[in-house]
Picture 1 (tube, chains in turn purple, cyan, blue, orange):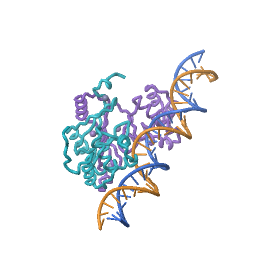
Picture 2 (picture 1 turned 30 degrees about the vertical axis):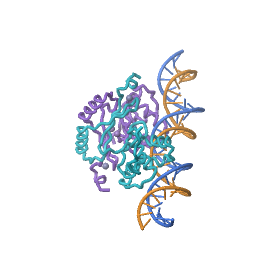
Picture 3 (picture 1 turned 120 degrees about the vertical axis):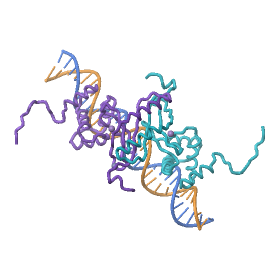
Picture 4 (picture 1 turned 60 degrees about the vertical axis):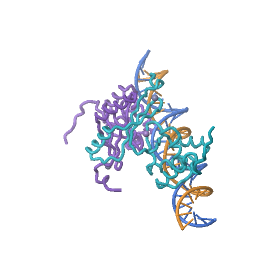
Length: 157
Length: 157
DNA sequence: GGAAAATTGAGTATCTTTCGCATCTTGCTC
DNA sequence: GAGCAAGATGCGAAAGATACTCAATTTTCC
Ligand SMILES: [Mn+2]
Ligand SMILES: [Mn+2]
Ligand SMILES: [Zn+2]
Ligand SMILES: [Zn+2]
């Protein structure tokens, strides 16, 4: 096997640098729990995670971080604009990295699969409806619940 | 003052007959708690009520109905199609009579005012989006959060 | 009016999320 | 790099909403 030269002393696993910088830019102190949690949100494979999901992932990585801290940090990330919190029915809140671009969700009520979408016509209509009623929009939540095309989900009750 | 003839022996306060019939048609036994709760949903003035709201209203009417029963009955009414349950952010679930016609909501984040709306273009778009992604829609939730036109709500933070 | 089945009330349990507080870290200064 | 104040953490406890348990009561139907 080819030997691999160590190019520089600074390329730790998980790109700690990047996460640290994002956290700093968000106006938060760089702490181990924050870096860890952000890196899980970025690298764990799933895009929508509950606080519990994050906590379990931490446990599986032998990290000694309390659940209260997970909740606290996620809330701080939300305030700082790093993540978005979503409230889907019948479960815990879930968090996802804030991509900067708004989108809404399709959720399979059978398997939990989530599909993201953005529709400018819907957005436009919402703006009109709010305006017609004298509301200044702050945010909105649109979730479509249904059954996805997986065979397991399709079979009748 | 003109005297008023009693037209028939059957016109109790609160139109108990009507509620009883609705409950029966929904396939539920007619019990005092169910009749009472349905009549509150119909006559209390507010259209969107939490279980707690219903419970407080019952208390104020000297009714001896437990909170657990309120939750149970509201859930049964929901299953029976008599009421719809809504999940607005940051609070309890709220219930409203099922008018038979779907609608969505605008919610003032300052005063809690709720405006109902229905937009066929949005509905149509949702159907298309679901179809494009192979989903069969079961339901959806659209809530627009904003600040209403009340002067109290308008003033800057 | 009576019996079977369903419903109720009260309290308890559960789940998710937040708090309180003593202890530990971070970021900055010298 | 040591020292310090502000801020963060972990733990356990608390809170808020809702569901469950079960004995006692009520409804339905005959
Ligand atoms: Mn998403
Ligand atoms: Mn409504
Ligand atoms: Zn599915
Ligand atoms: Zn308002």
